Length: 113
Image (tube, rainbow, N blue to C red; front, side):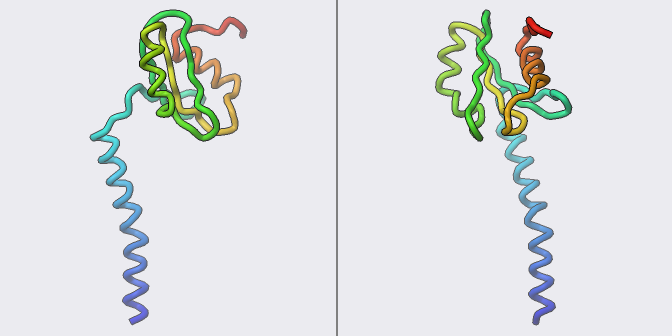
């Protein structure tokens, strides 16, 4: 009886993560995220820009928030200029390389090197 329980537990431990991965991939395929993904310093970064004009506004979400928190504001600002929201790579803060990467992704060159 204990061998059957151990086998059932092992089966669940193996099957559930695979099921989760499959459902996650299906969700991503059927509900694409607006914007694009870019590689910055070896990390994948999500960037969603809308509107046109200068200066570009880059909205940073606070703490552990993501770009979705600004989706009520971004469409309104995009009538005036280009607005970009993004998901930070890591929660510690942006490094200088990441800031330069953001400037490059938004289509503007850094004024300082």
